[in-house]
Length: 240
Image (spheres, rainbow, N blue to C red):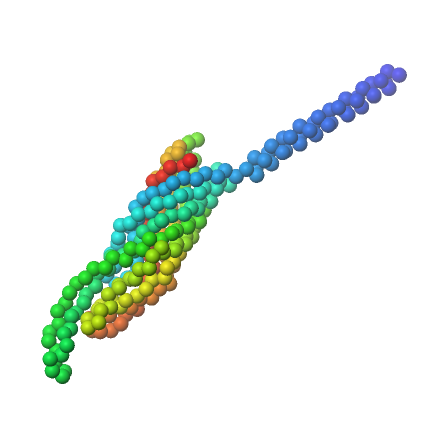
């Protein structure tokens, strides 16, 4: 009789303990699952300075511009994030070119000596730009880290500008008039530091070669140039 009572007591204890363990295990699993499914999203504002140019452009020099926009950060784990955003960015080039003014002939086959003039054009389009960067983090403390980012970007020009827009009737120009596509795309790399809500960093963009322009040398021969954009950036920002 005592054995039967002990057996019944054991069975009742197991019946009450197992559901409680299963419920506790289910709650714990659900919490872990929710934590895994939760991906932190942070956003911030960025502003800074550009030093842009067009590589392989005849007589091209760099121009100082600006960049401003919003940043979106998607964190998958402590060391890997995905960064994107929407920016306004001014790029371009300062172009120096030479014009030879040639008057009409006074007699057949005879020309007056020409005059050489130097001119400067600034090509400075403003782009609407979207980068998509894989961002790797090295934590320095709970509120500070170093960030390394790399990935593609694509940009769309907000206006219509021409590179070397100076084909003038009656003048011999070193560079011909050329239109640039209204978009730019290439690769971008960033390195920066985040301290609490504040961010500071530098970056570099290089466009994919895609456009050919022509120039004329002193002998009147045409030369072909395959160009690409180049842009060095300095950014500061605030993360919300």
